[in-house]
Image 1 (cartoon, helix red, strand yellow):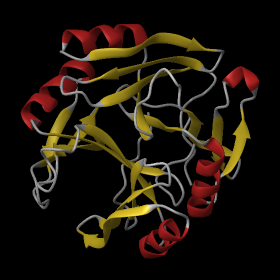
Image 2 (cartoon, rainbow, N blue to C red):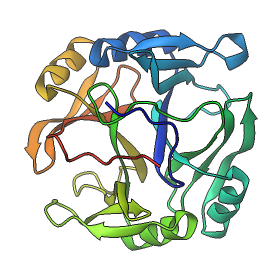
Image 3 (spheres, one colour):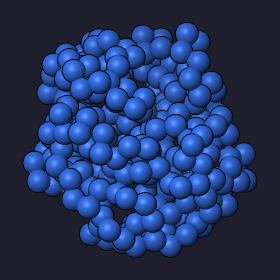
Image 4 (cartoon, rainbow, N blue to C red):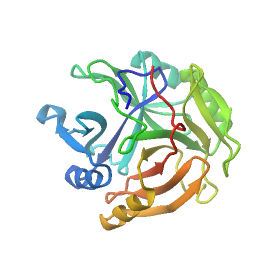
Length: 264
């Protein structure tokens, strides 16, 4: 499998989970995806790196008490200059949640929202180059932004990252694939019709799995919930799930050749 050492600007490059109980999350996701963990120690504030075959694929950290958001996965988009990108976010109608800050020698990060309140992170990689593995079982294979105003969302991300779009017609709601430098890097679309009025605008994370149905069974056995049962789609068999602390995520078994390559 390909190992990633960097990403094009605007490409999803990392995900992490902020959760009330890191130990519960570690056990849960290890059972699902076969992850091992590297603890960053006291200096890292309890943050752990999930690894597969010794390569970093995601992060899990304790939820800051001063930021009582629901437990959630955050998508990070690669940036060559976090400070400049934050300025573009603000100019396009977004909001800064966490100002740009250095993370030891690993890189520089910020947390922002888009015009509609979807939270996402920015990562300017130095020593930490984002997920070293993707698009294989146990790793992230797709990230998408879902909102209630697709035209405004397209405009926002084009202004900030220069995204171009290609419509994906075989989907229940209006949906585009977004492109960076002409290559597909993720999705952007309308929220599903069911629950649209009460579901927040957000970035969603999909993990690749070998057997979607087996993972759904494991989730229920491990104390999670099934939001949308396993179903076949034109891009693979997928399910929407919730972990024991309430963080939503999705899994998908993807036919070979249908993933984005993410590489820079």
